[in-house]
Image (cartoon, rainbow, N blue to C red; front, side):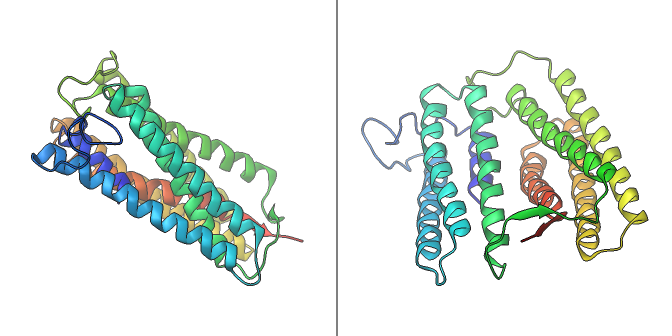
Length: 275
């Protein structure tokens, strides 16, 4: 939700609705006198909600019986991430929505999503054990998965460059990258196509060697990822050729969260708990 509301801040031109930080302005700590300030305040409100939930996660991991160090570690990673986000959010505002800071703000959100996902998955495991590679995965498949993971990550980063170049920078006067939008969009599109081809190759390799439960899980997670990524591609092309309307961009942002979660699921699927 906080990633989505953060995106709405940019899409509605409310990035400088609150021109100060941590106060909304020099006169008011909270200001909802205009639509822009109200939208920015809602996003900041979600920061408080997320921070509260992170504190609860840390306390739950700390006082869980039996206590597990891995859960404590991953819960504290959320604390570090949220504090970094609060600091970076302030930098975004105080630098007038600098595109590099904006990109970092979003990518750090994806890192936090990753930590939360891992904490959630590990909390369902019966005991604390080190993660090791499944023996049933060949060296070729491991290599393909690594290449696929790098391409999927590069695609996400390229998407943030497109956003930092395009019209939805959070404010009419916000600084943007000086790239040609068509050029960066083409780079992003090419990465999506190459990444999807790599994903299909991975699915094909898995289909030839589905002999273990972990490989079956990997097969399911890869197929889910392909569906989500293909949907993202369709929305991406639709928004580009229709003039980047806010409605489609907001769907694309929501899809990015699903895209990254499905990628996390893929990268964890070929792992197992070993002694």
